[in-house]
Length: 261
Image 1: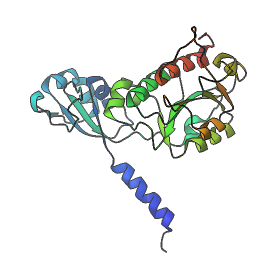
Image 2: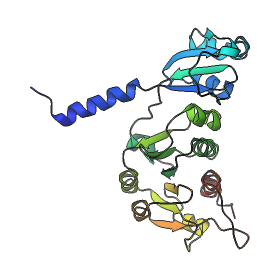
Image 3: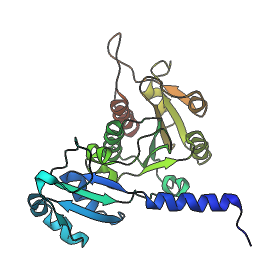
Image 4: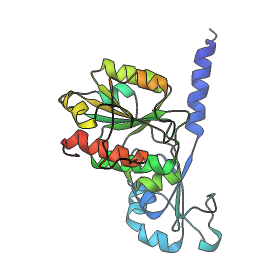
């Protein structure tokens, strides 16, 4: 029996995704990836000095490193990459299904949802904050968002290996599925009338999704429509602004403690 076209296309997409690889670089990012049992690791390139500094995680990983001359580093990295003599080729992490990862259970989890945030440094910083403040996951659309890269991993400083970064086909659809699971969706908007603290207070005890848009454009219209309420982070002066990674950190802190103001 011939397979339907949509089944063939889905299988093709899965094979293409499995074939993708990422080069992580820098001592911290490589060390954490070597220690992560979820990682599929393919190739490790290190200088002699880096090999000595990473001796324990290399031994634990079971990998055989390629020792490279630091002046002609063998890993195919961009010229500006600060690799510190260590690079690791890996498969992107698979965090599973949205419903399984974000199931509220007995707790009131927090999520961060990013609407077209494409700067890997911002996303890396958000992953660090999400790990520090106990977020269940960071969720972003598959297209028009920062993919898993070496630059993102280096900025995340190890958080990429522990903090789920789930990229979904359609962000609005994911938000609706989360709302059906009981999540309160709060969109961050500098022009909103409601401040973040009272917006969170009204939903205390509920699982919360904090939705942030790209700097400049902010939240798209469809994303705003999927939010239960819009809220702003109040500023002390007449004018103020935060970049998206700082706004995420403040919002996560407020969602966890209720003491940001």
